[in-house]
Structures are given as structure tokens and as C-alpha cells.
Length: 284
Image (cartoon, rainbow, N blue to C red):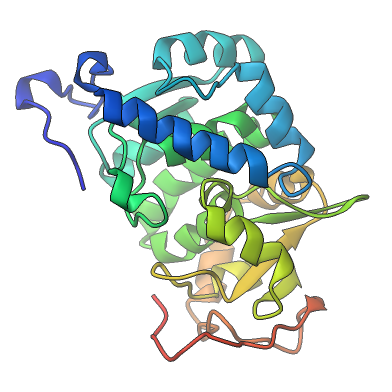
């Protein structure tokens, strides 16, 4: 659901001024309800870097935050800024913003009846789920490297492989800590149901992160994940994005895709899932 913005207000890079005047009381109430719900669920589930980032940004439950205020704090910490966008933007625009350390944030918020599921990202997903980890220097550098890699992948026709890396790290990644598995993926952090499912349920696989494995793996967009990939530290994924991906893409073109719930012989399996409740919906 993209809320229309007059064409004249959208710049050539698809950014807009945050239309603060368009937020209603219901919008702010929805933010409060979502924030308070996740604030109850995430202690002991979210990684400490996320919690620290959320605290450092001073993101509060009061209502939809002002992007300029968050950007001032974020820029001092890691050189990133938030830019408002009307909704999903073209791939080259998205990657260009990331490469320049600008994170595009959808300005509008879901309706109350969409509290539990929303396929298209909204301001709560983008701000609450994504932005706190941009306060972490290593993750902030990873996101910039991903943006640069995305521009190159577009030129090489390899975007589907790179999109899988984003999906299984930035959106749905888990990290191993001394206290146990914790969440860092924004798609999980902004979801009540998946925040519980990804750590507590026996259905999904939990597999050690491997770059080539991840970029071969299909994913689901309409349900909880069948497989979660686990990193040891943010350095794992940052180091994985340093090399030139061109030879990887050539190799990937010769290899078959892996199903979203499939376990392969090279996997370091931390937990093989039961697959209960997966159904037969095809992968993306």
C-alpha cells in the first residue's frame, strides 16, 4: 500500500520531505502499539547491537519519529542519514542511496488491521527494524558495501543472487552470541510473530552463514522463513562483501538453486527443522 504523494513533491532521486502534517492520530497510535509490542518481545531476543542502536537514536514509543532528528544522531555516529521516500523505489535508486550512506525510509504507516502482516515495508519496518543497526560501525559499512555491490550486480544481470544475500542477512538474519541466538534481521525485528518463531519454533532450519550457499537459496515472501542463516559476528558478512563478486556470479550461473527449506551436504546445520506447517507454496 503506497500512499500517493503529489508528483511535484518527489525529487529525481525519489526522495521527498517527510510529510509530517499527513500523519493522523491513528497513525501515531499505530506506531505506539507496534513499538510497545516489540519492546515487550525483543529483550533477550534481539542482538545487543540493535538494542544499543535503538537507545542511542532515542527512538520512542510516542509516535512516528521525525526523520531529520534521527538523521542528526545517526550522521554523528556512522555518517548515515535517513531520506524519506514515497514507497518502494527502483533498484538502482535504492542501491545508489545505500552506496552514499543514505537509507531510504518509507514515510507512511500501516493501518491498524495490518498490525500483524504487511508485505510492503512501511515506516515502522524501516525505522524500527533497519535504522538502529546503522548506529553500529561494522553493520553501517556492510550496508554501504551492499549498495555498491548492488549497482555492480545490476550491470552484470546478477541481482537475484544479491537480493538473496540481503534477504537472508539484512531482513532475516540471526547472529550467534554468548547468550544464544539473537535476531538482527529487520524483517524479524519488526514482526511480533516471526520474532518468536525464528528462535523458539522447531519448524525452521538454522544453518551457519555461507555466502555462496545464501546466494543460491530461494526464499518465501508470504510466510515465515523455512531457513535462517546464522552469522558469528557482523564482521562475517562485511568480510563476505569485500571481494569482487564477478567470479562468484559466473560460478552461480552454473549451479542450481536451493529450495528455501532444503538442507545440502555442505551445510553446517545448527538445527534441522521439522518443517511442520510449511505447506506447498512455491519459493520465490
